[in-house]
Image (cartoon, rainbow, N blue to C red; front, side):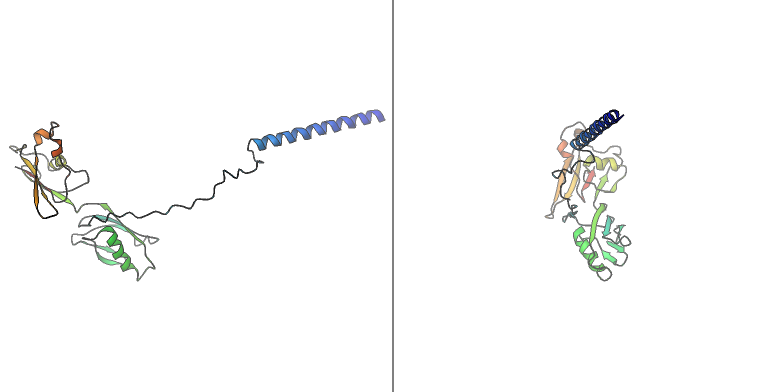
Length: 220
């Protein structure tokens, strides 16, 4: 009985050693594979990056005019922030700021005007003005077209676009003798020839110029 009991104790001890060795090996494999017991990879832990600060870009060459639509944002003041059209008198209305002359100002200059008006109510107001829709810049179409008049200009409007907006030609329009009258900054006036017949055939495509504010397309 004593010899048998000793033999059983030896076998139990061997089994326990085997279990411990197996557990140790499993834990090492888990660490090697990046498991939950793995040490953190200090190289992969980059320092936190500060969020980038948005910068306000201004087109100081653009002058706001009547009918333009402005998005005005006052930081942390949603009650004051809003989208407003510039009225025909060139002014806009804002809560707290009241009536402000917008026409004739650049977006940056208008920001300063609004901030100045708000200083009595808001400490250090931060104002952003974005021209959402440009409607003050227009071109004209006169002569033998179906819908002569003034039309809002876009950055991609060409002479062909202008004629299409005006409903195309009336009968007997002189499609080869169209021209664009353009007022130059120095006060002079330029006359740009436009031969519709050639342009639509792919000839003289340089005549299909991009329209500028106050251009007038004349269709004889």
